[in-house]
Length: 316
Ligand code: BDR
Ligand code: CA
Image (cartoon, rainbow, N blue to C red):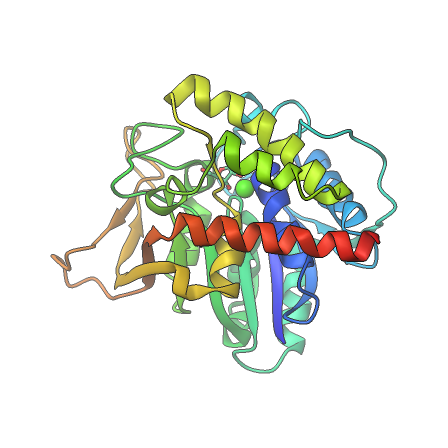
């Protein structure tokens, strides 16, 4: 059983990542879901995380609200991509899954300090504010982290929110800098790989055909998500960025990566939030990241469908 904390800003693709993880109670012990401001403000991301727990019928999952603002910059959000609620495409309701009282950063610190050495996997799928704040406040937490599997950054694909920066890193580059320099093993799913898992119409139709309430919700969210990317990039479907993290934990053989240094630009106005990936080892900067650059997209969608089919059994 792998103990994980999912730190997220749902977001349709964060929502799918959560549903993927929640489908495997025998594999993941989700010790907490921590919400951060990102795609939409914190009051919505924490509610969205709880809505997803309700959908998965896992109202016992502990959900915490964390930082409402990045460490040093003003928050920028992405309603243009995700809609006003962050998870447009499904019906929004007041969830039964409660919001824990503790601040997400306090929870992360307490949970990690209480865990055995190198035992917890952190899965951040939003701006890295909560994680970096926890590290800054209590560096001793790192000793308890097994690895960090995150969605963020880009090399070959350039940026999606500025010409050179990916959204999660751009929103809080100072937090990302702290995380990439933290010294624990990092696996990063950047745009180079997430742009390979497009939710084409056929793939969304296959999900809808599973005919269970969770699969319906995923199909609804992806149909909404699809509209933006199809119009902006002319692509066949939206990239399922965040679920790459959980898919990697479930089936790492679907992915190819390379150990290299990733450093984050925090100064330049022009390129702030850029991830400088030393893919060809042209510097002597220390290796800090397993930079994922390739995925078997067919295998990824088979895994997603299998996982969502599990909700048919629990609905029966
Ligand atoms: C990342 O930014 C958000 O819009 C998505 O949820 C994903 O985490 C992709 O750049
Ligand atoms: Ca996200």
